[in-house]
Image (cartoon, rainbow, N blue to C red; front, side, top):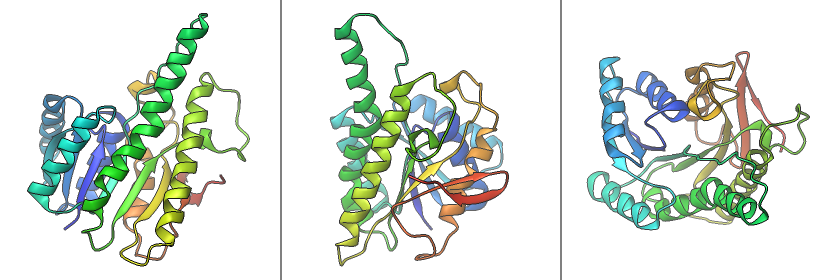
Length: 245
């Protein structure tokens, strides 16, 4: 039975990932990491009302707060003893365009801190618990907007593309460090849910969040060694395929 932590799991793609895992892995233990634990408890009630039988627990976790990250790690360690899978999903992005240069720098730094630095810190803090799992895995929720090679239309937020590209690079190097490790290697993957209808984009996407969660399921259903770590994946039109960096 796997213990799986999803950050930002009370709504949007994070909630959809929790739903999908409940359906496909009904005996798993799913930890919903949320800044507001009451919202996490509400999300659990929704999952239960949909028939979820998995072990569901709301974990207070603000990925921008170091004390919160340390406290969450302690809770998971004491209650569950290990962490099999970490899904770094939470993101908060300021897409405003102020004219003052000082405010522009503040927003850029804030976006990078949330989407890259915080995911790095969360991952590194949970490493000790991941090492206790028989096959530890980390999935970074990213976007093809972070692919330098893929040609896409102009975007409304360049920051979003930049932080996702940095998150992708972070994952590559985390995997490279693991590949040099002889003991209980962690597998790192990047997953692109696609343009999903969520509050993050004003519900302007063309995919249902549950469709977006499919790429995570494909990764979790794989056998160890089938899908190399340090790789980037998506599911579009039913096709599970690798995304170019």
